[in-house]
Length: 78
Image (cartoon, rainbow, N blue to C red):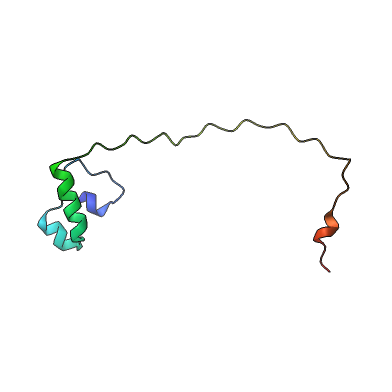
């Protein structure tokens, strides 16, 4: 029942809910059928990449563009 109550927990390969669990939690018949198929011939789970990212390198500040006139008036409210 632990695997049903806490859905994010990984269930062991070949796990199938009991008839009592199916009735108590109202599990979908298609889901139960998929679990039973997987229990007969379990497929190895793919290895997921590590999601930890390295901190981004700090970029130097950009130089000011003093050759182009500012166009703030384009956003002015009429």
